[in-house]
Length: 357
Image 1 (cartoon, rainbow, N blue to C red):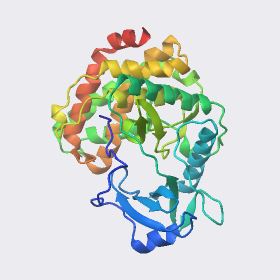
Image 2: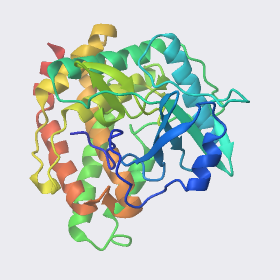
Image 3: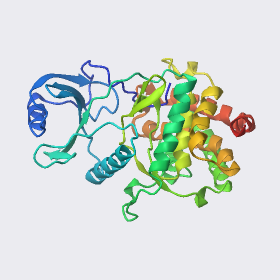
């Protein structure tokens, strides 16, 4: 169970309910720019970001995935940056999905009518099954991702790709909004937000005391969770999504991965989600990472607090915007986040001891 507002399954073929979609005319126009031969079949794919429709395309040359990017700030630069990262990783034989270039311009980015399109070779595989081998390899591949990109050049002037959930004024501002009696009449939700603010601040201070500001920044994935991956025989076969690549400290990626691979949930009502995490998967993911990249004691000590920060940040931002986390009630989801944050905080020393071994 990964903690995502919208978990996708690229093997689904049902028509998406709501959200953005392709018109027949748009689809025909876009595909005409690619030299993939006669189109034999098209199927919409549901899941993932509802503002970014996807189509499975079968042609006489193979199977492909077409994606229209959602509109947003710095779109072109973000996509260009992501494609450069993917191209770099491909030269290192890292398991990325292959981008398909347009026929005439030989460009992996297609811009039409104020939209950006991407075409990928379709990858088959299985979803994460929770196995120790798969968990370890997911951690190992994240470390390889970081190692391959440790010297990847980026432009300092373009700050839109910088930043993370740690010690964030944006997260605090959103928590403050939820805790304000002026903007939120729900007393229980305000109390939950206030307690989360305290936990967030305490964790931020602890991470800073471990030396966070002295750690090197580089390209990170930004969204390393099971829903963005396909596996084959307990090995990571493909990373599917690079929409969140950014410049940050690698431990923010690592702690998010530990969170996403160890959180336990999945029941319709967040109140039924247990407080605890799957400790074995947490340790397994980290052990896979440490096979490739060594971490000092201060870094290891910071990871549980970084998990608390990322869990709070990932929950509060969409809830402030919509009142919901995906389709789940914002109030109920935040209460669950508080319970899980308290569990991590209470078991901090035990967990640090486990991951140091």
